[in-house]
Image (cartoon, rainbow, N blue to C red):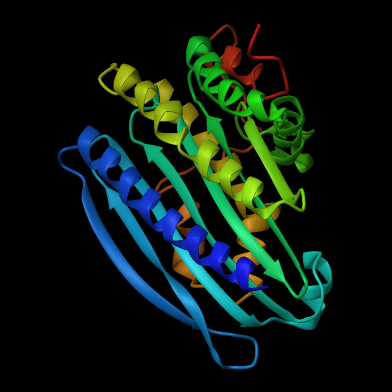
Length: 300
């Protein structure tokens, strides 16, 4: 248990450092970006001190809104929720980083990523992933994003399985299994019983996030866009909201463990639309984009 406690502390320190790196990347691409940083605390299910986190909320010219959050929470949890968590008992500890970036330009994709470590009673595991939600059919960008993660994960033998898990997870099942984006990779309850190896794995792959996304931002952020592009972006953001509120496990975990609501819901876009029976214009690039919200092999 002593080694486990040391690794938990090491992981928490690591995600705090990664938060700083991603913050610097955001600031380097958007010179007008503003940052609100909040340190927050929570009480556990029994009303005792239960840790907290650091929320960083961004708004700017290139980035419409973004959140890069870290947390380390612990203590008693609702026994009813504990049974669904996959651990033992009604005590938990969790630390991680979660981020969402919603650019203003519809030609620049939204991105999400998170990396976490959870202990529930006698069990502990790692989880996380990254996925891309584009609004314009720049296929080479989708291929680039997937290629970065394939190169990061293949040496560990996990790319195919984690890519497939992502394709199954980030899906609006109530929308005929339409994905919210073009996927990436996703994993949960990862524990090979070698904590040294598992921690090294998640630290290594998470370092690839900046390179997986920000070159796309640089490539597309100055492209001109049309009103039709923005309309499609806002419509698809509406689908993003649907997934995060109806299906996302991270949202549920945060709310069920008395997390800070504003920090949890920072994943939502600043602007979105619900369009009744929405259909893009026939023959448009947006109709073409709709074809890509389903699983496919992007590495061919």
